[in-house]
Length: 415
Image (tube, rainbow, N blue to C red; front, side):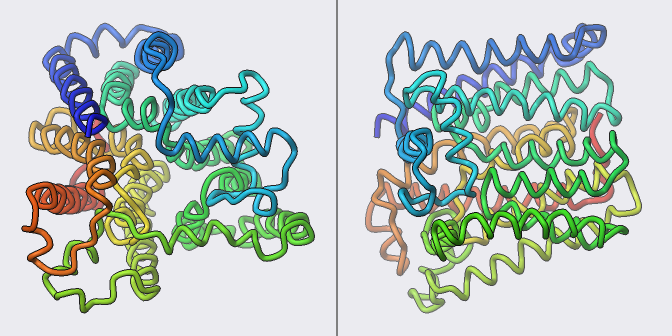
């Protein structure tokens, strides 16, 4: 349980630091207003990503654990020219392992994967600066960036957990900026298609609401279909139907999610683990994304996109059986920059608690033996199970709070 206590301690220290920064919010914001945004973001990245990486992995010589081992297996084999899905198993899109493999050419060590995740997180924030800058002052954005870099949900999941989920937001924000710069919907579609090829299969979910509100549907779909056909033409002769491996992730039961929480109250009679719940999760996630996109389609496109992203993937996190609380890293950037009002103490307090719970729970659940609660007696059979179940329930409730916040039209984009 040492990793649980370690993550909890780091999360509490991060939270205290966030509170100190919030106490000086007006002063810090005013000081950042006349600074060069890219330079400030670079300093933040060095202090809150590079230095922690050096301290943890080079000075303390802490070995990368958890998902890094899986990433290393994929990336190292990809760097040697092996074929994804045929020579090694991968739950990710086909180009993911090869992208990591390129970085391993610089430093052939699992620690390089962590550094890659940190670098991509920095790129995601830089892209987000260009995405959100028209809605807020430079000082306000940079203040939120400082908060983001310190939050447990970004710092711990990036440096300790080496999570890649933030890549998905990077691609969707970059795609919009490319469209804005080129005024071509085709290039928008190309970047989105690349996002799907470089990240995860679940990236495709955001394409549904985007397609429905897109006026130039044919020009939007044509590049995607072309890239998809070329990808299939390359993959199928090499790996056959094994390119469907990422779909196997939906079979993996994780926590927290609503089916797992309600299951013991119905004595394991709701069919947890069956495909039915996967389809329910997909319908609810995409459905909520569509409703959000339609609700905000008459406003600013960036506001619509960021809120749709939060609602869709936050919903997925608690309704899909294979999702887990690390997915907070997937929608934390648009939540911090586009939804949270940083003058609202209630929202801030809930966000900080939410970050701590989401960071600690995966390790807690794993070390509790990945419990599946079949009855109420299972929950009360040990204090550890009671803590785990209570944490799962709290995460689901708080996720619902942020879904409602992002979906609320009255909650205007915070500045």
